[in-house]
Image 1 (spheres, rainbow, N blue to C red):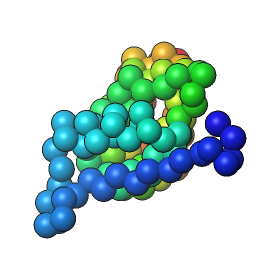
Image 2 (image 1 turned 180 degrees about the horizontal axis):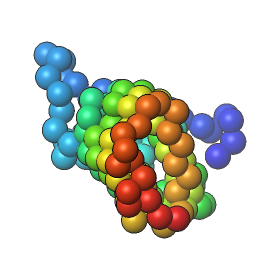
Image 3 (image 1 turned 90 degrees about the horizontal axis):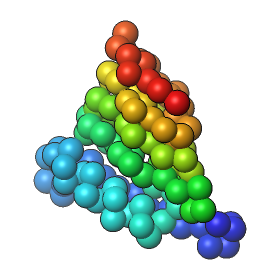
Image 4 (image 1 turned 180 degrees about the vertical axis):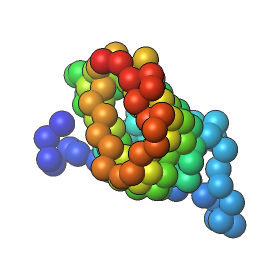
Length: 118
């Protein structure tokens, strides 16, 4: 997408009362936003499977997670997706990745790359 048509959506990992969203609800919100934007800013709070099966070379998608991510960040990543973790990363980053670019800028655990592929 060109700069003029680029769209960014922010998704919050907590509800209005400050409670953490479940990974399932968070994923549903991410998937809905990914269909409408090419850049997602996620305020994550340990949600799992961020970026699950997202990506398309004809419609590149960038996902930036600012908080700690749960297990399997970037799992089953598709070509056309770039996932950036700015917070702490947990186990199994890039699990079954088949083409996404995954960048970790925060701290990691000893199991972060256990299942990395791609």
